[in-house]
Amino acid sequence: MLTTVDTPPLDPLLHRPDFPILSREVRSGVPLVYLDNAASTQHPRQVIQSMVACYEEHYANVHRGIHQLAQESDDLYNAAREKVCRFINAPTVEQCIFTYGTTSGINVVARSWGDANIEPGDEILLTEMEHHSNLVPWQQLAERRGAVLRHIPLTDDGRLRMESLDSLLTPRTKLVALMSVSNVLGTINPVDEIVRRAHAVGALVLVDGAQSVPHQKTDVQAMDADFLVFSGHKMLGPSGVGVLYGKRELLDAMPPFLGGGSMIRRVMLDTFEPGELPSKFEAGTPPIVSAIGLGAAIDYLDRIGLEAVGQHERLLTERAHKVLGEVEGVHILGPEPQHKAGIVSFTLDRIHSHDVAEVLDRSGIAVRAGHHCAMPLHKRYGVSATARASFYLYNTLEEVDRLGPALEAAKRVFHRKRK
Ligand code: C6P
Image 1: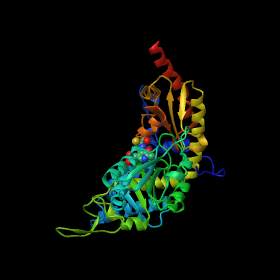
Image 2: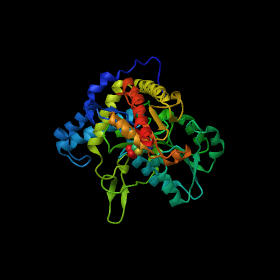
Image 3: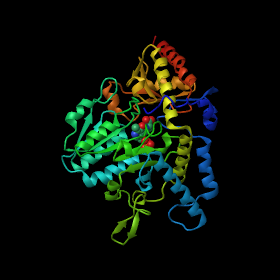
Image 4: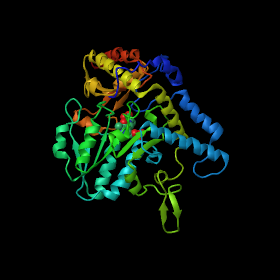
């Protein structure tokens, strides 16, 4: 995790008033403790207001009109793209394509780059910890093109077995697609090293940044990834918008995936000429207001600084390991806090994770339970489901502390039932 000791500590209490939803009560009048941030984060007023202002004052479709509202919407939409581009240090704005989320970005690459470049027998290297969004599109591609899928195995403590790269990366490998941070284990993967080694055998790398871009500084040029995808709704932005970044020469050479309005230069009755980047990959009316909201979310994160966010989440994660470690019967999946982001998944002996989540909910604590769209990962660790607490900049140590008594309560409820 990219944090420095010089970064002043983040005080979540300063930011919580910006998030109206965090002050509401749930169930029978208990304060909400929102620990489901890996699924989706909450929104500060600044993001909500940016979208309200767009609807109330500027809204029109983009890239189509010459009237004033169309121009104002264009300006706001284009400004959001510039913010995204600066946020990940993309060399040019045209390389940041607005998608509908991480899933849609991966599918664009699989359908467009994949169908044009993958030949029978080519290998695509994934990892055993991937989200279904970074498994299924490649399975579909492999089926269409006769490619072979390989997977980097995991250690018992939830890290990639890097030594396996010696045999898994070969001249047959055409693409490595991996998550930078696991949405279940919290593991921070050594992306830089994997990119370097993949490039050494001529493979491209797609990084699923859904769980890292919101929490740690991302520099696509330093990372040298060929593609990066992420979602707005995991970084204080609205749902329905995401980003696909790609290297210019790759995006230029890729055929468009979705056909329709906006993505063309010229259309004849029986053929068309595709437009330039980024429009080539933004067919139809894009998620205009969501993109503008994402721009406002980036402004908010920039003001706080991702170093401070990462440092704060490290404190919360360390505290969560301590609190959960004191509850007998809890087993945490994944590595020690120094190797992970703010995501802590666990099981509790003899209680299904859905029941754990339900009892935590009675105390106002929102966690996710289930397979978290990572069934193969859960199978690797011999469990079908886990409960997951995941943190963001507005969570406090006191909120994490509440997990302890709530889990003890869960044990009392379910162990009594079984007697
Ligand atoms: N993970 C979770 O609770 P979308 O839904 O397209 O915005 O993001 C998909 C996705 C892809 N990769 C990773 C690493 C992810 O964590 C997610 C979304 C959520 O873990 C919802 S399943």
